[in-house]
Image 1 (tube, rainbow, N blue to C red):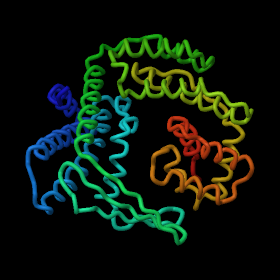
Image 2 (image 1 turned 45 degrees about the vertical axis):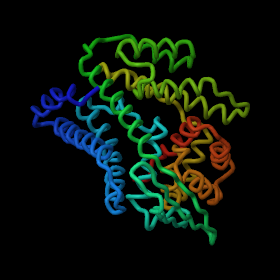
Image 3 (image 1 turned 180 degrees about the vertical axis):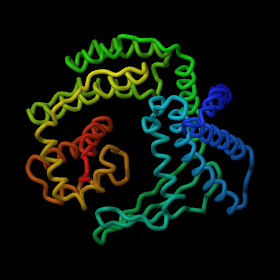
Length: 354
């Protein structure tokens, strides 16, 4: 779907000068138009001179990075929510922010919470507008690790344009959707109580039909439904870990309930689940070590983040108590990205001292 289909909605939203959403949408719409022009120019303009290629590569990486932010802000500006955008579920675009940080953001000096340092060097030997490579040199405790990354531009464009079209389509369908009251929130309330997989599947089908979504839509309701399905099928023998999985299941169901209510401009019950003992112990551990530990929580929900494993190891090096350490080892032993996201998000939900 083209941006033009949303143009009238964007300019209509600007009429409310008491609300910033309209100008947020306008700014985002304008930036997305600019990036479309940049992509077309990048693809059609041939370059052979090294400086020109570098300028184009730097510009397009930054442009794509900003465009992803613009998609989120366009959704918020037009719908008040970012439910229609979940770029992190796209592996190619998720990795884009790391590439951009390595090349355009902080290539010459990156410091890490565990005391390590990193430097990225772009190779210009076989540099072209189609592909390039770079090495990142990581120094930690007098040891050096070299990570080589090959980047191909075309897959980035394909992933971005496909994601953008899907998001614009979902936003358009939401804006043209006639507001109705459904029983979806009530069914999710029952799902919260029962965690029944058949009921979850029924709710997903009703939501897709009600909001005219593709089954592959990036909509956050469907994403959370997928996480809940993972949790319902997740079995642990250890009673404390089982309690943790149960808590995460309830939390995902409550977020689905919140989304469903918001989309119908309704309010509902306050769904609260008691925090399990392992998580309480972890939060107490963070509170005692907040100055050092708090920055180490930032990336724990992102299994593919370059700092995920080092931050996790740094937390364990702070000698947490038995229960907090058990929860951290639970995360460390996970090799599945969605499960790591679920555990890491729970750990990251710690509330700092005010």
